[in-house]
Amino acid sequence: MPDTVTPLSSASGLFEPLRLGSLSLPNRIVMAPMTRRRASRTGMPTALMAEHYAQRAGAGLIITEATWVQPEGAGPPHTPGIYTDAQCAAWRPVATSVHRAGGRVALQLWHAGRLSHPRLTAHGSHPVAPSAVGARGLLETPDGIRPFPMPRVLVEEEIPRLVQAYVGAALRARTAGFDAVEIHAAEGCLLDQFLRDATNRRAGAYGGSLENRIRLLLEIVDGVAARIGPARVGVRLSPLCTSNDMHDSNPMATFTTVAQRLSSFGLAWLHLVEPGTPAMAGAPRHLTRALRD
Image 1 (tube, rainbow, N blue to C red):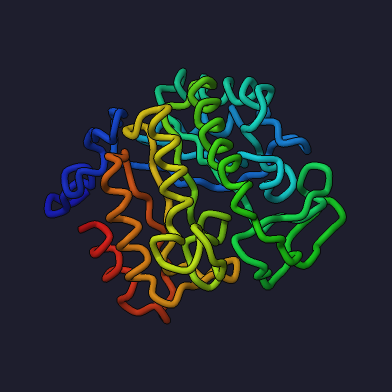
Image 2: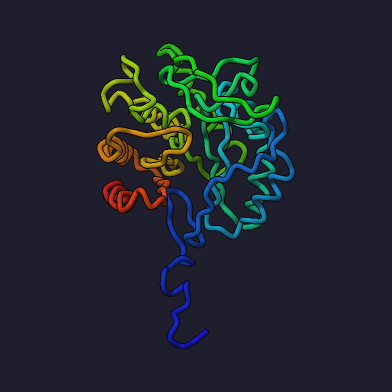
């Protein structure tokens, strides 16, 4: 290396330790969640998953693939769940393998909402969403590629059970040995569907006004943080991402308000997905600065 080039570790601090909530990270590299689809057909974690994550334990923190908190919220085939004690036990070797390799690992919690399908959910139940707004596009099912179905509206009486599903999943994650959890509220999943006005057209306590649209996320964060501690909880958002047929009429107002409200919990991190398309011009950087503030 020429003398005029400063080593990356000195220039950026990338390999310096970092305190992230309750976690002491040996470096500032975080492995973002990536769906690998190596679980069993019933959503059980496998030995291959333990090997996969242990191989990447050199990152300061690993955030796992999205893991469903309810059978009704199942994603594509061979994605994992964390809503039963058996799944919890099957996740334990994954966390143990990462720790043995010197790493730290957080389990990402999600619910697919309208991105699911009756052939993916337990007992063929219909996917739910804040409103009856279907996603354009196709998804993979055990029977092949199918269009996204029109979801049924999640009624208010079902929401306490949904909140408890996230709380229960977080508790199981800690029982399995995970260091933290990340609540997935991005890229078109159920919580993102509640946040954005293109998909949340409902009335009542969880729709209409911005404060109502963010209510479900805040209730889930509050419930999870109360049981496992806010310093072991992160949240993932994607204000400008259009994947899975998502958009919002005023992402700056929506997501700066979300960030302001999340700030009161003392969470470990806010994970932001920034689109890199030229059509976005400088919007991602501008919004990122506002959310960081």
